[in-house]
Image 1: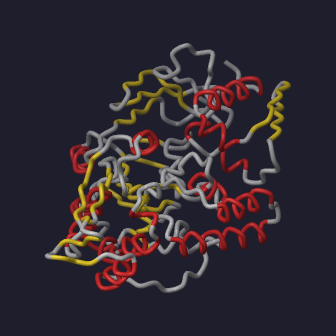
Image 2: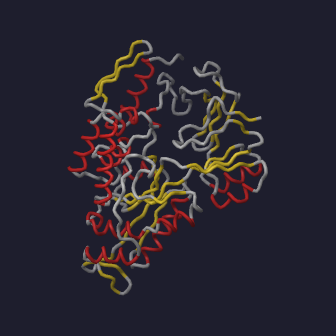
Image 3: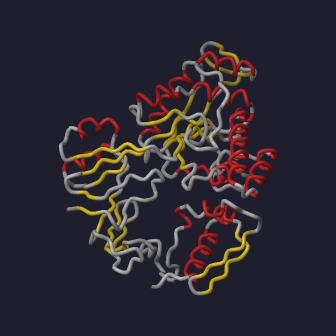
Amino acid sequence: RQMDGQAVKASLERAMKDSLAIKNALRIESITAKGNKLTIKTEVPFPEFPSELVHPNTSIIDVTESDFMNKPIGTGPFAVSKFIPGTAVDLIRYEAYWNGAAKLAKARFSFNEDANARSLALESGDADIVFRPEVESLESLEAIDRVKVESTSTFRVHQMTMNLERKALQDINVRKAIDALIDRSTIAETILHGHAEVAKGPFPSTFSFAPDYPEKGKGMEAARSFLEQAGYQEVNGVMQKDGKPLTFTLLTYSSRADLPLIAQVFQSDAGQLGIDVDIKQIEIPEEYMAANRDWDLTTYSNLTAPRGDAGYYLNATYHPNGALNFSGADDDHLTEMIDELNMTVEQEKRSDIAEDIALYVDEQVYNSFILHPNTLVAYDAAKVKNWVTSRSEYYMLTNELDVK
């Protein structure tokens, strides 16, 4: 089917109908389509609206396909020939792609949450390209003449999401203690083997809207001091207040192999202060955190500026209606600042406001930011041509990619 304005309109309307979070994020009042021209009117002035479209849930699909969950029809250089959810997707070249037919006749994406299994697939020749191979396997992969390993900085942050609806976490000193307990440098070196930048906030330091943060108390004794300010004392090896032990339920998930390891490091360090941390493995973090509030902390990973604008992350994570506001942040002053950002067009002013928001989030300790991980990709350089490791992570299979 020819993609035109009407097809895009129908796709966006479907996305908003199926997801209240997407509807709140897009803030679309009306959409009109005429030929290839699409006119979108938002409910309020919304300069970063294009950033909100950089989301998998707003990908344009053909909604006239009755079984688009299993047979999606999209807009790229390849068409889906077979889709096995959670296992693989087979693609064939789409000859009429607007930017020129792909060099590859077909391709397969195979899904495997086991990073070691992904690395072994490249070593054995079962895969030509491996996204996020096991960090521990990099040395052995680099020793193979035909294999090239690329480590590229990204727009991603690993964070400790805090459920602000939990009583203990409503005390800023408890949040400060959690933040102080996170040994970022050790995590970056021992778990990521140096393929990461220690995070001070949600945005990598290269962005103009990443502020210079004030120094904060770090380490075990700083965490202990914050807890004492919150009224806690360690009694017989148990951190407690009014006779009630301080405990946390910490969610993590294995699709990013480093997150469970980060959770274990935090669990160990918290234990030294007499804090019991129960780690719970979940499958799909967004679904679980949105549907359940029986948790305190989550090791979570998120792209913060996929289009180079701070508005996407700040709206999604800290606005009361944000699609990724799993912490339950509902701070009137913070919301006012985000609303001001949303109404501001001039880029330098937007950066200034975004800096102020990031500093306020840091001051209030609404979540802790651990590190900015690199994207690791290993591929058979003897066969693969024109591979580009994208910082945004959204672009992998292009029409220029080839395998000889």
